[in-house]
Length: 161
Image (cartoon, rainbow, N blue to C red; front, side):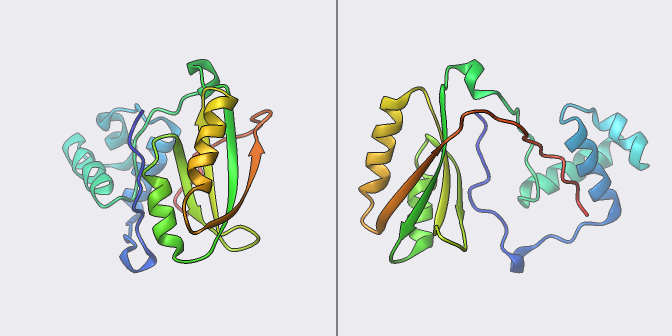
């Protein structure tokens, strides 16, 4: 599995993208395997210039290029979103959770939960084990698990606006 961006840019670190970089990102959102030469033709740059820009966008954490899989076809039969309420330092709890291999998404939220995490696992037994580890974190006060029954929509093409 590809490594996720676990330390996203803060608003103070935000990268300012010019229109060409945005076009490159949009090209890759349409097809992550599109060649640099094809992207270059579409945005008016050389293949080498596109390669440099893509590398820079990856290095600063503005984007990732990953293979998106269907967990069900790979033997992961249980997907859940878990809402977590905590006391104490949320960022420390989020860091701890981000270090767990079975958790693929960690976000600090506003609302009835302090954190939301997504877990992909092989079965309910593994889910119970993960929940036990999450609940054992000292700052965690409650959890609520939302089991995915059917994925109806998942996209990554929100563009660059």
